[in-house]
Length: 346
Length: 289
Image (tube, rainbow over all chains, first blue to last red):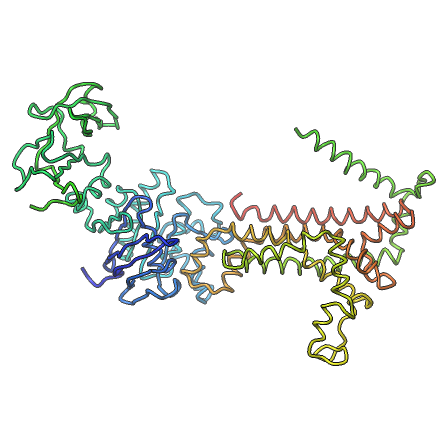
């Protein structure tokens, strides 16, 4: 990767005396879109707030475009942020909102307004320049917040769950636009979300956060195909990956990785890897079936009671209460240490 | 459910108001039956120098006291909206004068203003000689000089802005934190934040409070003027509309004439309410209401 646009070096942060970030190391390349993914309370937003300088780092260094900004106030860091609530000024028009950052930095008004117009055109809200935020829909506010973020040409864009207040259709649309905007601007972006689909679709790389620690950093493909831990494995993917003891009831077909099965190991496989009609499979009963369009999710119980979810074509879904045979292949299976949850490397 | 309120409203507000309106066109001294005089009372008011002085005093009081009260309340609210050591005590101190019973508050200031032993003038004389201030001036003659007495009443009223302070404090605390963080990211200075964010966002509340205070100022000058300066120094330096009406009615028993003056006061109030209503309409668009 090229020269980093943003680096976090062992950054810790605390909130009301409790540590919420534990020595986080992250590096975002110039022009890269990094998605920070994690459940609520994982410290995702805190990462952004520490980068922006809105929260102090209790340890570690933050570097933006090669400059150490750890002790700089927010206004000196040259970052832009899109807040979850958009944080538009309700008393200012769209044009004034976008130009705000330029005007408080003493850019001449005419220049500021011209750049605001250009930024608005970039995100497709130029028709709204004279309106106030109260007259805009959620999607329009989102665009204005984006225009305001990019008008100043910052070193880093920070986006704090910017799509979470939008309905699903709009979210999907804005997601694509956001990605296109990133590619067009070549900007360094850090995007926080709890939505794994959003992360997989948007990101150049994903950093999965758990309890204030980085669990795994990798491309969407790496996160999906080689989750570093059972946490990542289960957090990314819906329904979550099945986890069973490696020497348990389900014996995958094909050639096992060296050293497997063994005690103290777990196997994980996604619902789509499960076949429910293998003659040599483990016996299970169908507890319930959810049909989602073409697909159906069958929630099964193995003989010993362990739950397994299988994705099957809706047309061939089993009946509730039916007896089925669960089978998977080693090729579709991930192996983890049972105690640490970390990925097993033979 | 509304019945008790309506009974109270009709019996205690609307009926007396209607009676006052009717009395404004009569001559009535509590002893003889009211006699119809038409517009005579209102015409007499226009020519009455005491009424004109009272009206001017009331308007000047409102013009000076209301902005000062708002300014102090806003300043304190912005200073004390964050949680910090001593802030709770400071907030209580800001509200305390408003909680003191009016008469007691008046008597307290009577002592504070005393030209000889009152602490205010003693403080002003610190560093000066022969009873003069450090700048060699005579300290204000709070209770005997007309201008100083008017200033005294305004000073008294400035410290009873507790309610305004509480409303502004709540309004400031209700402003979203993220717009301030946004401003911080743009490196806006304290002055820029005040001018471009805080003030405009609080403007609707400030406007309402200003009008409310202007209406109330017609009333809250009464007790200080009655207790501390007795409407003086002579002849009528601190005789406000409310005191004028009180004296005309209850001391000179000219109820019809007092009712006519009350009518003028009510018209002033109505004018203020209209302004308030227009302001509310104007600011409605701000928050997308």
